[in-house]
Amino acid sequence: MASINKNYDKLQGAYLFSEIAKHVADFRTKNPTLEIMHLGIGDTTQPLTPTVIKGLSKAVKKLAKAKTYTGYGNAQGDVRLRTALSDFYKKRNVKVGVEEIFISDGAKSDSANIQSIFGLKNVVAVADPVYTVYVDSNVIAGRTGEFKHGGYEGLVYMGCNVKNDFMPSVPDQKTDIIYLCSPNNPTGAVMTKKRLKEFVDYALKNKAVIIFDAAYVEYISDPSLPKSIYEIEGAKKCAIEINSFSKWAGFTGVRLSFAVVPIDLVVEDTQRGKINSLWSRRQSTMFNGASNISQEGALSVLSSAGQKENKKLIAYYMSNAKLIKKNLSALGFQVFGGEHAPYIWLKTPENLSSWEFFHKLLQEAHVVSTPGSGFGKQGEGFVRLSAFGDKKTVQKALRSIKDNLKL
Ligand SMILES: Cc1ncc(COP(=O)(O)O)c(C=O)c1O
Image (tube, rainbow, N blue to C red; front, side, top):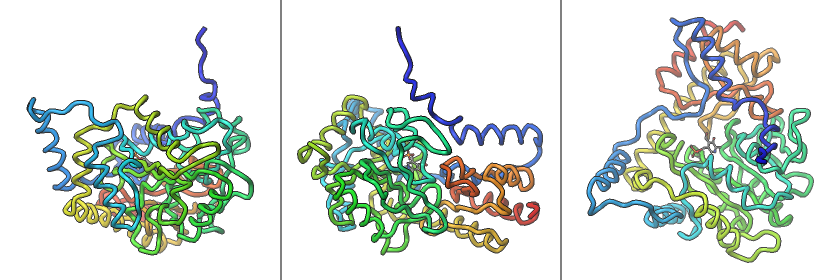
């Protein structure tokens, strides 16, 4: 008799964004003529740049003729793209070999799937609040107990709050798999080199592995802040880095990402190269390679024209972030993040809960936010605002908050 994976029953509620969408749909039904401004979900809104469009079109045209048509490609990714990424890292003084790079269809899939190459007994540490994919994928795999008192049994939570500038500290117990995300979704905080070094040292000492989600590093403008965990000495021995073209170049719909699994990375009872070959095996068994069209687009992102254009795209979103931060601070809100990340982490006024303030913003100002409590216990009392909107929408939302929100 077939049975289900009961770990799914441990998962909490609906996916956060489905729940938000339901509330927004209810509000729209009751108020069909009102304009709703979305500062909620972290999806990009601006068009792809001309160079990227050219690259994608070139790939489509190649598929139109038998002579240039290609089907399945290299499961690890087009070697031209992996070489371009290796060169991209080199320019940042980071040495990453072509054989260490794996092209994929999204940082979400990679950050969810990477745990599958590690044993079920590993103790997992995550930040709180957290990009929930790291938690849910480990719950589904069976590395946690039940959800109790705002957290899963067996998971180690690294609290991020006002007191520690929303930067996690190394766990005070032994853990084996540590997820870090910098710049951070949802808090917008960025880890300093010093703090990241503490994690690398901890991982080396405890033979732990760090999964470093770098999906937002292109939003960092301060050169002293790390854009790759491999800027820290020793990180190639203990860290996997995951990155994506989604927020960097507007590929949320195109889909393309990459993971670096260093040859030097070792964990208990493994030789050099073993983790790299396990990920290779996992991907070649369960994934048939990323879209050849998307990969050609990514090559264009990495071209010098593409990089220049995408810097402008990022500057556009960051000017939204600045606007949100400035206007909401002027209204007396406590706002965090938004300097090296497209997210603003806003403390709710009057000790309102995240969901109470979400509803207040929606009802009074018609602005959609994301309740911080959906990202973890320590996200309670915060909402996340995204700077990925169209500038006009952001401006309208800010005006509406100023004019309509009853504070
Ligand atoms: C921290 C983080 N990692 C990964 C992703 C997903 O990226 P992708 O579109 O490449 O799947 C997101 C998307 O919001 C994210 O915030």
